[in-house]
Amino acid sequence: MDENIFLNEFYKMLSPADAWDGEANSIKEIFEARLTKHGITQNQAEKLLNMQKRSLEGILDGSAKRVDVINLLKLGQFLGLEISALLKLFIHDLPQDIVVELEDAKKKSFILSNFDIKNLAKSGFLNTKTDFNEIERRIVDFFGLKSIFHYSNKQIIPAFSKTKKSESTLMREFWVRSAYAHFESLKNPNMYDRKQLVDLIGKIRPYTLNLAGGLKTVAQALYNIGVTVLYQPHLSTTHVRGATFVINGQPCIALTDLNKNYATIWFALLHELHHVLYDYDEIQNNVFHLTGEVDLFLLQEHKADEFSRNYFLPADRAKFIYKYIDNQLIVGNFAQENQVHPSLIYNFYCWDMDAAGKGNYWAKYKHHQPDIKLALKDINVDPFDKKSVDQTVQYLKEHIFNI
Image (tube, rainbow, N blue to C red; front, side, top):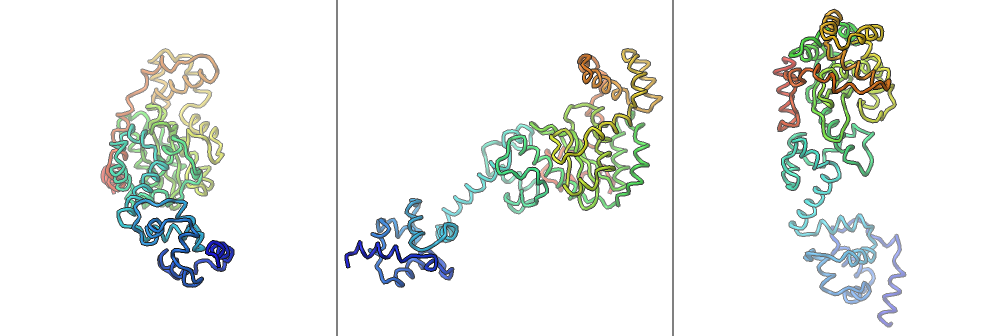
């Protein structure tokens, strides 16, 4: 029979039932078994595949440094292999140095897809934007991962599960994963008690007057009733000013310094405590809720804002003190009487005037805002400045929560 006619007939013989049965361990073994089964020679197979002898043998024995993809796919069809099975066997047969190159390329692709390198370097978390080996080590060490690919193993953030992610989404996801990792590692041993939280909230307001230690004292008290509060710096391109998590049945709150504003930190804390009190079950189902970003889970943010606002400065008291907003002495005395730091009064005034379209007063009253660094001094454990999550948690246990 003419060889070309024979080869054309052989192609027609191939069917799904003629495919690889999975018993052979290499492409070469499958190839040789196919030749034996159909009684053809390697030379005939080369003509059938329209491949040169050197190209075919380079694939079969794994000696080829570079392989023509079309040739590989043609060989896969000849052998009855699905593409995934073909690639698995092909990679298995490659020299170790080529496998290392592929693994390296895979890691770089994963890093580019899951991290905003530019803004993580801007934040100080990364010291390089080009050394991918260093970037990989930094991330793996920080989260305590066995492999860079384990970064996204825990599907704790279903809202960020899109295939293609924007820079802001990547940074937001990193912020959330970092906060989650710290809470999970800390493992607050105290049982959460909602009634105790309600009682404690009624005692928080005066601590806003203690600029240097008030926030730390409140964080310690909340920790003792099962509510963990941590501070985590704002990251570029994100707008998070607070977040509430429910991890292992316990509420956890992460605060950030989005506006570098003392009053905002306290406002955010009470806002998140409202979520703990009234949105606990929904947050538990979704693992976390972010304040300041798009409301991913449709919680009623205005109610949490109203709760925090009314806690510090109810509408009737605001109406009274706003008439004297430019008299620092009266505002100061009013603040003392109502056990709230004056900066919150000025903040609410600026907000209300802005919302009512009566002017922007933020710059005018900015000098009434104390240095937030002083307030955060005792809880400002910048996790992005530490080698690992565990290192930060150890410091928190020893210096803040007194464990």
